[in-house]
Picture: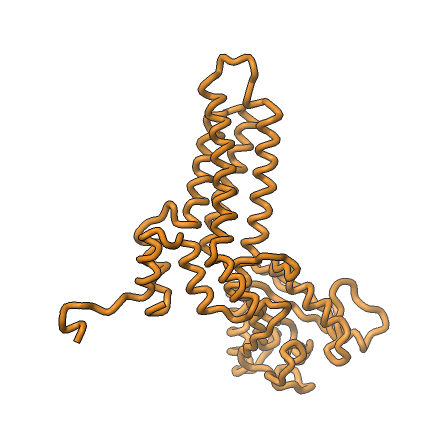
Length: 339
């Protein structure tokens, strides 16, 4: 009846977008609504609530304000070149730049933790046949998801299981063992395994300790080499050594996974973050580093000021102070209708 009277159905995320456009929420807060809906753990939900309350935006705005203050300092030095004091070589400026660098590092660490909390972390368990990949997946998940036998090449397809490690959602992907002379069915499993490795956040390369001279393949993804079956050898290999059979080393492996993901469970006040935020912060950091470099190498205050301006603009993209309609359309189209 409403539609017949001239109304229309709300588009995905429209109510949240209107709140953003009417300055009720900034963009990071609006995104936190979707992150809260999609949160897969209590920690992720709490992080989304912190972002929704404005904690994330406050951190970003504080850094942007600090960049602005340094930019004002530099531009003042450019505007008054006849002063006896060389402001661009003054220790005060270097102190300010060092303080900015520390603020960038702190926010980068927080955003990394926030991103893996929001998106989770996908790890592909790979290795030669009979290294114990399926057994490891079952041990970490606490369930018999994968069939385990002593016959090499049992796993023919890609198996997935989601677990929680100190609040971090980790998707484990068990794959077929990689070898050179598989049968036709196993060959398809190996093809799928390699494809899964290409799209993973990280690769856990499992090595049989009784046959340790198996090098991990070259990959663009971070790779964690883990030695299994240490209960069958006298000398434990260097690095991460486990025995799925006895459970030895599994806690150390879980800690190594968290470190690889850049996730810090002890971090207080984590907030949700997205890949968009990581990319914007990375652009801002690159402009800041470029500005420090031209100041050091060329004493070019004008170029430093310009790089600081670009750094400030990239930070503003994170909260939506600077944003295009195309970007907003992509962000809010992912929202659940009516949320």
